[in-house]
Image 1 (cartoon, rainbow, N blue to C red):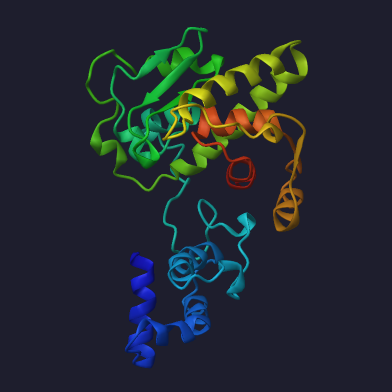
Image 2 (cartoon, rainbow, N blue to C red; image 1 turned 180 degrees about the vertical axis):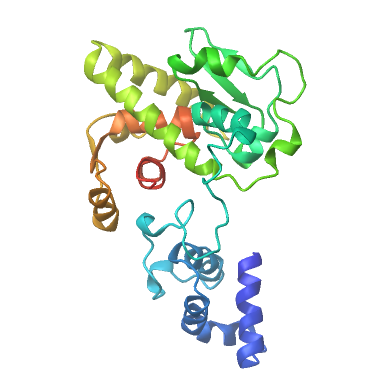
Amino acid sequence: MKNYRKFIEFCRSEYDCKTTEECKNYIDDYVQFLVNKGLTANTIHTYLSPVALFFNIPLSDIEKPKRCSAHNVRSRSTNGKIQRSDNDTGNPKYAHLVEFQKRVGIRRRELQNLRGSDFKEDENGIFYVYVRKGKGGKSQWQLILPEDVDFVKSYFDGTENKVFASEEFNNKLDLHKLRAEQAKRAYQYFLDKVNNEEGYREELEKMIRKHWNERNLDKRTKNPKPINKKDLSGTYKVRGENKKLALKHGLPVEYDRLCVLATSNFCLSHWRLGVCVNNYLLNV
């Protein structure tokens, strides 16, 4: 509730509020305060969510800047707040890390924690980099494209030694940008296989369902939760500001849902089509 406390502190400082009920009258003022600070719509949404929850107000009833993935600043900021840079990704000094990330695409902290025994092969002959503790503390299996297997495997010696030395991370490399580029490669790989190999769509759906059933269990019954069948077929269409962004940069505005879900699951370790398309496949 850190962000809720920030709201209360704002009300006490600006309006000398004594009770939380008094603070409720200044939510709109707080929104304007956040806007004036230059925060993005996404960040403002994050600040307001606990406030709306505490006062039992639908977040949609609070007038605030509209969130839009096209306005995300990660990897494409010009306001000086995001200090990561891809200017040095071609520097030989960083090649050991950069060339790996180009073919794997995991988070900075996950890269730092990789061990020499974290290269895996499943029963179907598909290779993965095993992330022992990813986002939210959960383990994850990062699929490696067939053309990259030998290169990625060369980084792992089978021991418990770390793959990368700590000093390799003393940089401002935009590793998230490389993660997005790898997601684009993976999506194209899945799409090409679906379009050109008979039976692959069914095989890919089977892989996705198996992975879902293993990793999405109901806490009470321990049975797999139902998968959203709409995500397994059809076309994901980019709309609004995100569509304008795609057209401006010559990117597709329609995506195969099954291939997006495969990319989201096996390469980004989540199950959110919108996040995969708007935050990664449209990353520019």
